[in-house]
Length: 158
Ligand code: ADP
Image (cartoon, rainbow, N blue to C red):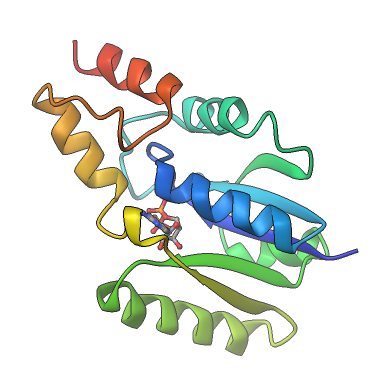
């Protein structure tokens, strides 16, 4: 059985993330979304909120599970016996950082590989930060994030 981990902050999940999740779920038998509990960042949504939002939006995809993790991604992958990390590539700007991440991960854990899915052109410009910025100014973000996330953003910026 092929399993993969799609890690990220998902603060909040966007339609770009969801596109990568759906496509990964068609490639791999089982996909774990690993929501990073990063103590050095201060996210808008708590870990619990980010996990719950993701659970809601993937509830109709049977081979996707949502979990949170702390610390090194490769350690989390190793503990779960998963050898594939999925990342999304939007533009050249993502490339350098993602390359560095993938190569250093391989140096630390040679058995783990990173698979990149290029973003759907429709979402190439989309990031969680842009969504938060728009939402903070009261812009309608329903074309960028799932409906349930629109509501949660509204209540954050009331
Ligand atoms: P991180 O903090 O790890 O960058 P993000 O939640 O921002 O976490 O993103 C998680 C993954 O999803 C990364 O691989 C990122 O490149 C990818 N991603 C983010 N936005 C999009 C998008 N609009 N389309 C495709 N992939 C995306």
